[in-house]
Each structure stands twice: as structure tokens, then as C-alpha cells.
Image 1 (cartoon, rainbow, N blue to C red):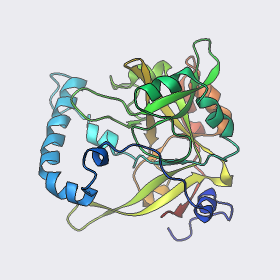
Image 2 (tube, rainbow, N blue to C red):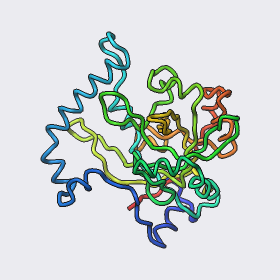
Image 3 (tube, one colour):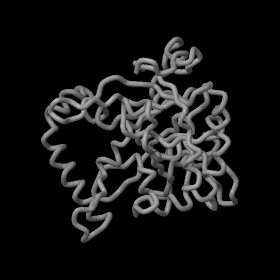
Image 4 (cartoon, helix red, strand yellow):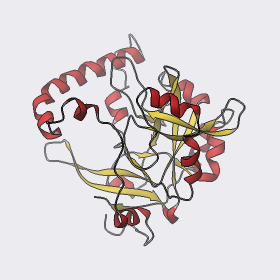
Length: 286
């Protein structure tokens, strides 16, 4: 990414200098198989995972539009449209109040009883429970803990939704119309995708990406209730020309001043897409 602007106050660099906090998330695979590393697991189970993925894709297509052969819906593509990682810096002044407020929500205790503690610091992975901002029943912006990922019958959780199709897909349509949220992040991570000679995509360098000027990245999302607890997905869009060098998608990010408009259930979300943040900076991450 030669020539891409990296400001001297890029927050990712400051976190590296003082040491990154340990991620508190629980990995179900490592819990069940503590002696097996991920590389060995991948070699053993790759053929079975591939077959399972094919069956899941077929089941999801049929569930999305039964009787419509050749449907363009692809859950694998929807899920992989970004690499699904972002970072919360607990001392980030723009989002500190949100991080403090989330543990006062009654939902935080309910998630904890279900086995999921709310994460307010460090690198965030899919299936984590994290702070979000959404509209309360009386229309006020409020902080809620939500779990990252929709459960769609027949497949693994889906973590992203394409902004181009969210308004018409049955899995996201209702949330698009009235259940929108914003996810505060200090920056997000993306891996550079490079086409190989075989035609497959090879993943190389990891980058930390944030809005220029050091602003927080307010990721736009959709949410719904699953087993009476809120779950969300992150909306993705076409990348800027600069970001296209590493990936063909990026999160939909709005400036902080438009967050309340985005979560307003009476607002028209399609009219806000042109307000998205496009001035971003990046730095290689470890």
C-alpha cells in the first residue's frame, strides 16, 4: 500500500507500543480440543468442512427463496464479504461513554447467564457480545449489548449483510426497515486478498483501518432478537478505490453525527448511504 496516508497519531500504533490487551473471548473449538492447534484441525477436517459448506449453501438458498433455482443468494459470500474483526480501545474518548454504559444494561446480565460476557476492550471476533447503540422503545438512543451474528436455519451464523441487497433479502429486510444499530470501533481489520495463479484468492497482510483524523469507526449494522436476545450483523459496501487494493468489500461506516439518524426507525436508511465515511487511513497490523 505504498503512498497510502498513515498519520503519526494513528491509534493502532499507540496500542502496539503499550501492549495489546488479552482477548477475553471464548473459543469453542479450543475448549473442546485444547491439545489440537488450528493448523492440524484444518488438515484433518477440511474435506468434511467443504462438504458441509456445500450442503449449507444449498439449504440456505432454498430457505431464502424456495422453488427458485439459480438464486443469487450465497451465504458463504455474504459471510466472507469482510474479514470480520475490529478493535475496541477502552480509552478511546469518542466511545468511552458507550463502553461504560453497556454493563449497566440488564441485557448484560442476561448474556452473562447465557455464557457470554460483554467485551469492551481488545480485538473483537464474530459471535462476541459487544456494545452497540440502537433506538429504545420510546425512540431514544440507548446502549445495548448485542451478539455478533444472525443464525439462519441450515447454516452457520452470518456476520455481514450487503447493503445493496439487505432491503430485499428475507433474512435482513425487517431489520433494514426498522431495526438498525451502530457498532462503535476504534478501527477495523482487513486482510489483503491477492489472486493466485490457480484463480483462488490468497490472503496476505493484515491492516488496521480507521477514519482519517483519528475518529472512531461507527460501523452500521442491523439487529434482530434470537431467543429474546439481540443479535446483529455488520453492513458492507463497495470499497473506496484505495481500499480496493486489499479487498472488494468494506464496512458501511457513518460519521458520529449521523449515528442517531441511522438508528431512528422512522428514517429512510437508503438516503443515508451517500453520507458514509470514505476518507480512511490504514497501517499494517501484527
